[in-house]
Length: 409
Image 1 (cartoon, rainbow, N blue to C red):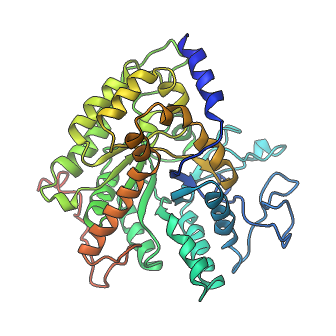
Image 2 (cartoon, one colour):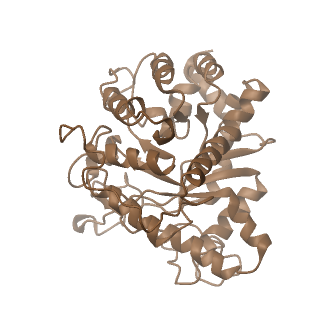
Image 3 (cartoon, one colour):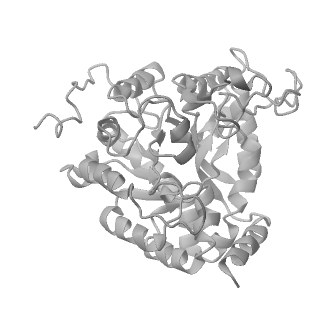
């Protein structure tokens, strides 16, 4: 069977019933308008049971009601046996440009208008958790449900050397809430092109500081960094020109970090692939990366890498996963739609069923569980909280932190 036909057949078959537990390493609670689905089954607010209004946008929840984002999410997760979920906001907001007055864009590719940094996105995520804890204060059963949710900080300008300070600020503002950092944005094809200001790259000093901070305080970190520029068509193969930038980041923050406990756990979103990225022999390339950094690097297989690469060369990817069974995680990359999580995760069925049972369970949910639990133990050992991170008042880092190589130290 031709690779394209096999990929299509695999996709159709994968939409069958999900019978085993899974996890989601990549879920955005908010969309590119900084809104999203919520639990509106009681019809408390205008719109559908998920809060979608006739305008095609979601109702904006008021103070004290933002826990509905989580009750709606938790209902979906429990119904579909999704054990652990990384929950982040959306680091960008799509601008509605004047010359596109006739149709408001909702997704970053809906128009040519720019996207801008959404520095308040983490505040919305944190507010959902705080409202939930207030709404269900004293109800241990309801509060226990939060254990499967793991909020990450993502609203950062990754070209700003001060982004590290904003992470610390968010942790201090909401102690005990955050369990990681990401999805941090580096090279991201059209999204990068639409971003205003300086373009990010993985070996930017800002990202070096962020990764060093995550290693120091025991927070796992996820990053989107394309391995190559976009191609005009499937036959235009590119070399992995941007891979070295990512390897520089790993070398500086992992290989050159003398203390093992200060090395970050890194989740590489979509395994470095995005729309219109065409690279030959990619499984072999990843083999070399994992051979060097397998103790700290994990590949997120969500979004287009599944259909564009894995299902088109399944045997090579199965061999790679069997060789590194502890280094792969799956995710939905659903944007503001908890209801889409089951559909997206079912796309992994063919891949998972082709793996030995012990490997399948690791990829499906145990690897993410291990990353989160191991990071929590590191934080606890360093005195930074037992689940979500808490920084002591005395915790401080000077302006030279993470910039040693630039300053010649």
